[in-house]
Image 1 (cartoon, rainbow, N blue to C red):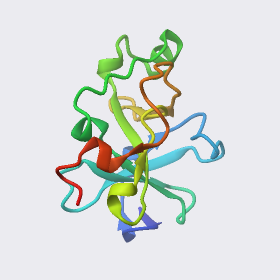
Image 2 (spheres, rainbow, N blue to C red):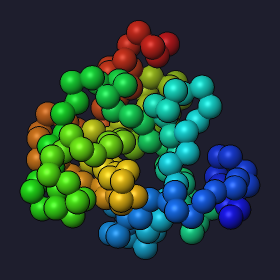
Image 3 (tube, rainbow, N blue to C red):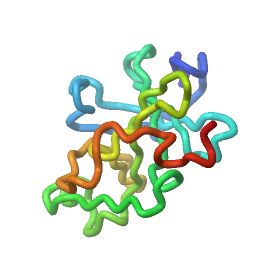
Image 4 (cartoon, helix red, strand yellow):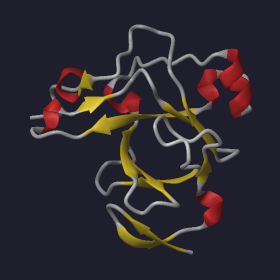
Length: 148
């Protein structure tokens, strides 16, 4: 199938590759299907979470472990059950990024990751109980050697 996207123009995609978000994302409960599209040159660490239904709706998502290797999100037993796994480590995690100029001022939401079970193509956004993670971590504070 073809899909108009916010950042990549028209692309071909397989509907079976879409990730289903039964509850949507925070603030976008009506949006239920997304594609994870990697940005060229990012080694899969920066992706576009593109709505299948709304071409203009796309979020910049990042692999939190590439910037903060000690990131250790722990989901509640209820969230694990909804995601169809026993352990938090069995899931993929992405954090939303608000891009700013300069890039180092961009922020990551480590408190509310997007969690995906790649085997079931199911996702959800969660709020972690851990107060170590905030909703606005500056990119240049996480990875000062890579951002200039």
